[in-house]
Length: 203
Image (cartoon, rainbow, N blue to C red; front, side):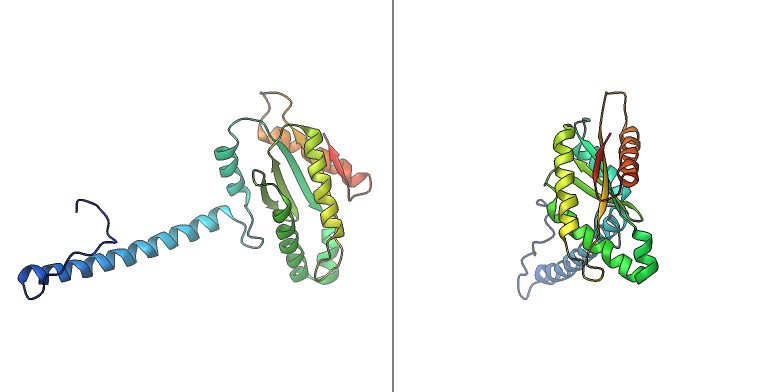
């Protein structure tokens, strides 16, 4: 009772009434430990469902905003939108199962290439968002270009080659919010696709 540590067992004195009480108390403690373990596992599963994309296992929108609010209290970061080029044709040609396979492989590839302090999340469909821990657009563009090249040279299991287009933007002033920077990154992405795809544009 003093330690509050339910992992400890009470000493069971043999052949005494106190020992019998201690034995039953230890049974209660064991049940409590099992319930705590189940509750902990359940909470972890709920957290994964709430903040991680079930297909790709990377952060979803809710998870991205949770991490931004926790890790990026200042506006010292850049936002990059990643979009798979001609993804609809992949689904139409090979089927949605192959499309899902591409999404999973792409997510795994980019996750292994981003820096520790950056955030990578699935925004929806074939779009992903990358939060880069820098407010320097030149650095953000360089990192994005490296990722684009990694994707271009990667051999996907089912469709061999896939390319991505990327739009990058940063905060121009303290009045801007995340949505403003995201919209600018989306404009840059549109320009990248309009100018031939498989390239990085900044706003």
